[in-house]
Amino acid sequence: MKALVTGGAGFIGSSVVRELLNNGHEVTVIDNLSSGYESNILGLDINFVKGDILDKELVESLCKGKDVVFHLAASVGRQRSIDNPVLDAQINLIGTTNILEGIRKHKVKRIVYSSSAAIFGELKSTVIDESHPQEADCPYGVTKLAAEKQILAYSGLFGFTAVCLRYFNVFGLRQRFDAYGNVIPIFANNAYKGLPIKIYGDGEQTRDFICSTDVAKINYLAGTKQDLTTCVINLGSGISITINQLAKMIKEYTNTSSEIVYVPERIGDVKHCKADITKLKSLLGYTPSVDFKGDLIKYLDWFKGDMK
Ligand SMILES: NC(=O)c1ccc[n+]([C@@H]2O[C@H](COP(=O)([O-])OP(=O)(O)OC[C@H]3O[C@@H](n4cnc5c(N)ncnc54)[C@H](O)[C@@H]3O)[C@@H](O)[C@H]2O)c1
Image (cartoon, rainbow, N blue to C red; front, side, top):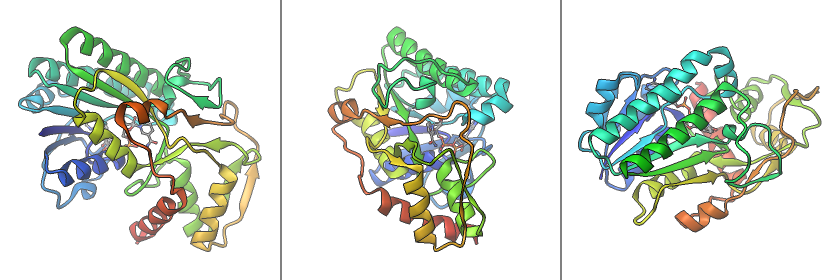
């Protein structure tokens, strides 16, 4: 199979690339390295194109001769989108449409899209299935949802298969600490630097964390499984843990002097969140790893090495 991976130099994209290579496929990556790193894909046997998905001609030319497009390139995250809403809309919606035009023009058979649980907005239930109301409450959630809808519309109009995977909280190797970091890299960074580990509220809020190696395997299945028709799938581990449990595991493993400090809850923060993975299991036949602690330890070891 010949695959195009957009955002392949990113945290999750670089795991999808490895999964494709491990299964013997030919991979082209387009990434503008705005939040990804060339080092994430260094030494891999791929065709790397440093470019922007807003470059319609380039994107279309890269779709030529491909069997599947794995679309991960995006402006990622709630706060980034609030800070840069126009760029978020350009990349996530216009960029996605450029890719769809390439797929349409060159008759690519399938797209696997990295969507997000951010499309749901404020959560109305503890366990989230695919029919949960989609009331995105930040530009990122809105553009990820709009892109999902655009992909489904193109799939209906032009007859290719679209699989939209709505990720919950993903963590794993090559996930760096940055200004828009997620909770695990922030805790890891602070633990290794002896800085306070800050918890909003009482820490009893729960989150569904899924490891990027699982996400890569699921992308691979979504891109290759025969007889799969266009669908949306919630993608989490189906297990939730409290932020207190997470902080305790990181504190113990890193043996840090960092103190856990509690600060007032943030307005709009979700109390409990877990993906209903019934559809993931039934459509793709995949059950994510339940070894959260083992995966977290591998991540913490990688993080420590990357700090040097
Ligand atoms: N990390 C999570 O927990 C999470 C949760 C839900 C959804 N997602 C989705 O997963 C995908 C990958 O996210 P990630 O966490 O690996 O983030 P990431 O920032 O590491 O990856 C995004 C990649 O896209 C590239 N990119 C950004 N704009 C581009 C452009 N205009 N042209 C070409 N390349 C561009 C970046 O350089 C980066 O390599 C995104 O679509 C994101 O919305 C991630």
